[in-house]
Image (cartoon, rainbow, N blue to C red):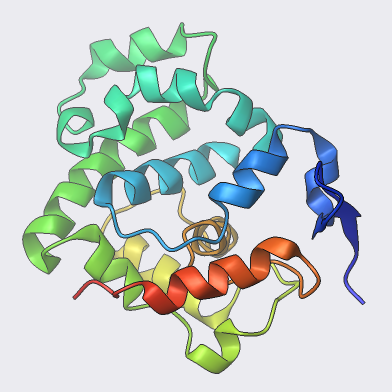
Length: 202
């Protein structure tokens, strides 16, 4: 049986919430709920890239700083960043100062603009990789999936960086392409309901 912990209201939540009280609002209001807004999708895949080798706790604590540093992850603006911006960001103590990840974010913003031009939206492209409903209904305890491997491969083919299968699977979990809340978690049913009302972008 998957483990849970009691939330602030005494109801069961996914066990990973115990790492920090900040996880409860993120878990209850964001994680797993379906997203089709291109800017939010771009933000999340960038933050997951920054998380590589670190913990989500670290990234979540710095999320507002990241938003300020990267123009709220407006990829049209980030795509215009120059080497001067890289130098500026490497001095920003509020974010993760990793040159490769900073440069990847700028690169990926350019790739995001291309994706919108080619596919109509980032959302239309991403949601084409949603698992079939039967798979989606079963909480997973894995770090990758056939879909995340395929999506990672296609993103890399299109020139995206820091988008390995594990990073992409975490992104898919967070953005609602899979519902990995454990069965006993009070939020799982809410996510399922949200998905039923969600219209997949085409």
